[in-house]
Image (cartoon, rainbow, N blue to C red; front, side, top):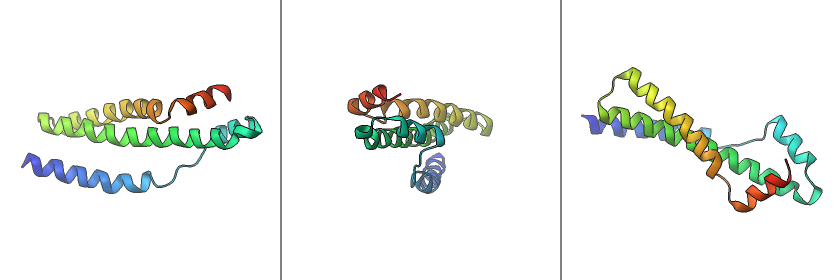
Length: 113
């Protein structure tokens, strides 16, 4: 029975996650940061900012699913499962934001703050 719940939860999470990851746009602060960058590096800054946002989104979804899955396997009730999913989403967001870019992007973003 628990295996069925986990599988249903993972299928539901994947259906919800697909539209969320479809489009990533920059906010007003990021657009100003791109405009402020050196003319030769604007495309690189835009690309790196989008990659960081995609990493954060993906990390949030994976962290929430992982936290909820762990709580379900451990036998937690609904409140504990939601709390674990929230904590996993927060941790996943921070981890995904940090690992969503490579060293070259980190250098470009550091030069163009």
